[in-house]
Structure formats: C-alpha cells, structure tokens
Image 1: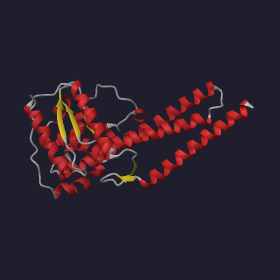
Image 2: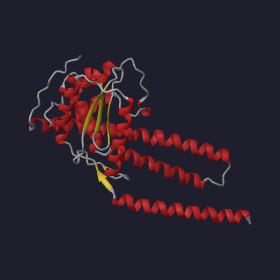
Image 3: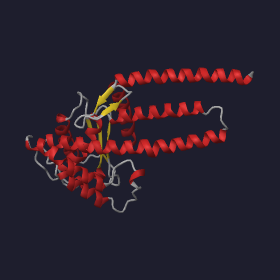
Image 4: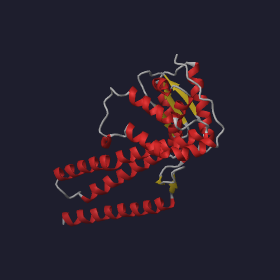
Amino acid sequence: MAETMFGAKLDKKAGVFVAVILVLCVFLLLNCYKAPVTGRSQIILVSSEQAAQMGAVAFRELLKKEELSNNPIYNEAVVRVGKRITRVADTPNYNWEYRVIKGDDKINAFALPGGKIGVYTGIIPIAKNDAGLATIIGHEVAHVAARHGEERLSVGILAELGAAGLGLALSRQDPAVVSAVMQAFGIGVTIGGILPFSRAQEAEADRIGLVYMAKAGYDPREALAFWDRMEEATKNKPHPPEFLATHPSYGRRKSNIRMWLPEAMFYYERSNKAPNLLISLR
C-alpha cells in the first residue's frame, strides 16, 4: 500500500514537472532572440530590465570592494574609446558606465548587463593604443549587446531543470546510484555543454567586437597585434586544455579574427576614422 501511495505521489510530481516543461517550451518558442552581427538564435529567459538591474547592483557591489584608478590618461582613454564603441553598438539606450580599476596584476576587463564596463590597469599596457583598447572594449560591449549574461543565466536555469527532472526520474533508485548519476550529469553538462557554450560566446563577442571597433573607426587589423601582445604577456601563466577552458585559445582567436577581417574591413573602410592614440603608460 505504501508503495502504491508513493507511486501515485511520484506520478503527480512527474505530471507537474512535465507541465512545467511544456509551458517552458512554449515560452522558449515565443521568446527566441537573435544575436547582432552573427544572427545566432538565442534562448533568453530573463528580461533586459531584470538583467540591467542585476548588472547595476553587481557593479556597485564590485566597486565597493575594488579601488578605482585615478590615472587621468587611463580614464580618458577608456571613456574616449568606450563612447565611440557604444555609439555604434546594437544596444538600447543604456546608462553606460566605464571604470578603470586598480589591479596591475589583473590582465582583464569585464562587462555587466545594462552597460557597465570595468577595465583593470593591468591590461592597459597590453592595449598600448586606442585600437588595442577598442579590441578590449569592443569585445566587452559585444557581450552586452548580444545579451550573453542573460543567456548564461538562462542556460543555468535549463541545466537546473534538467537536473531536477533527472533527480525525479531516479527518485526510487539506490542513493549511491543516484549520487553517481547526478555527478556524471554535472560533469557532462559542464564539459559537454556549459564550457563549449562559454567558448562560443567568447568567440562571438570577438567577432561582434571586431565589427564594432571597425564601425567606430578603429582598424580591426590591430586586433591581431593586441592578441599577439596578450599571448606574450601571459605565456608564463598556466592555461588549461581548451576543452576545459572558458575562452578559446589565443591561436584559435587569431585564426578566427583573420577569417572575420574582410567583414570588419568593409565597415572600417566606410567609417569615420578614429585617431589611434598611443596610451602613455604612467
């Protein structure tokens, strides 16, 4: 009798879960977006307004923990290049913010939904000039324009739903078996799904950013020189195998850029050329 009652309970749970999945599938069909430049179809479960609010909160929290740079040359360069890039980007009227953050050991930059850009001082010497900085900022603005943050959140939601469905299906199995299967599922989703998806987004941001820097008047061929400098600057840092990495390898990035250059040059040749100012390193 207990088994029958448990089975009825399980069927009810399964029915609710299936109903949720069906509703979600309808929602996905009605909410399919396309990334700018590439036209890739996207599934996004988070609204732009929600994402912008989360991005603004995360940005404020991060800036409370970090020290901003007061280097006027760095700040002027980031704002100068950032404004040219965002004027040509496929984005709504975001309240764009650009901050230079102290961190000479951090060769990094980031973007948050809603138009929040952070550039660490450690990457500016590698940028070297405005075109190098346009490569960095164009890539970060591309993440925002393509709504990559919202897309990652959506992928996480779908992965959690998959795990919940698998857990429900295995609810009557031996706990040790359930644990092993769920662990394998997590590894499979990460290596087979989330990491390749992250690398694909990074490559897409490279391509979109290349077009944006070209439209803004920066020579996209300078992107190759920037990635050469990045590779040289990080050659002594450990790098995971590409299949375990969140970003494409430098070699793959440069190969992709060479493939995309004709597209970017089309826009550069028709752009209002920007001066490629050397950023004084002080």
